[in-house]
Image (cartoon, rainbow, N blue to C red; front, side, top):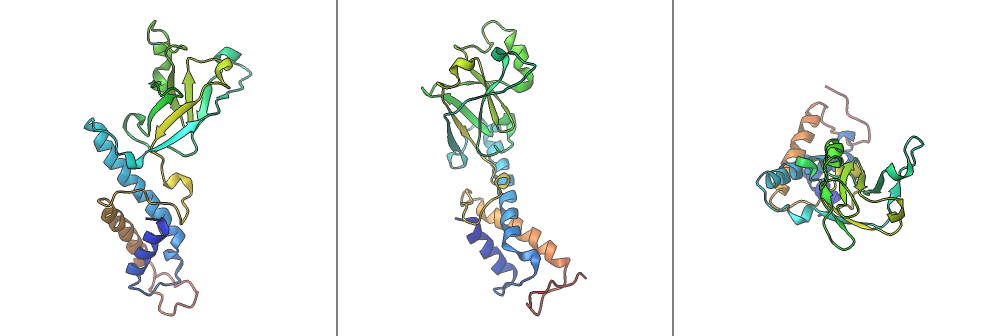
Amino acid sequence: MTLKYLADDIILRLTQGAPTDDSELEITQVIYLLAQCRDSLVQQYVNKQIAAAQPIDTQYKERYLADTMIAEDEDTVGADDERLYVTLPKQPLSLINDMGVVQVLTQEYLPVLRYRAENFTIYQDLRFAKASPHNICFYRDNLKIIIKGLTRKNKDNDKFIVDYIPSLASQLPAETDDIQLSDALLPQLTEMVEGIMKRQMYETTQDLTNDGVQAPNK
């Protein structure tokens, strides 16, 4: 189901089948609210799965083949210490234990070990846990997936597969975007957005003329 389809349906219900030209009911605003509320519902739902140690629902995952690895160019850092990373096309959803990035795999489908960014230096002091070509690790820095254990000579040869859960609201959602929400959660989403829009409509006088002029505030 597209965002536009659901937004149009909500607008029709709120206006009782006679859409108003008041700006507070512009479809772009409803679509943005849908994306925000959708992310909130998915976040709650998936966090419960993570907390219960259950598999994450596959319908919210996307797979990204990262075939270009980039080396940070830092003047104050030696070439061997510069971070290598791949960049995700969309912002991961904020989840427990940063599980918005579900997993990272090598091109041979071997798992890459997850580190927390703040604990990376601690692991580097451990003989068998530190990152190396035989123990490739990653941590996330916003859209960057930092790959540790490799050097610049690996930059053009190694590829990675990232399974992650993107945020819909962070993408400037378009009318044709799919809502990506289970049928069981759709009624909750509709109720949330309608509630927000109704509160906004109460702040303005009802538009009776539908003449393209914004109705005045009460």
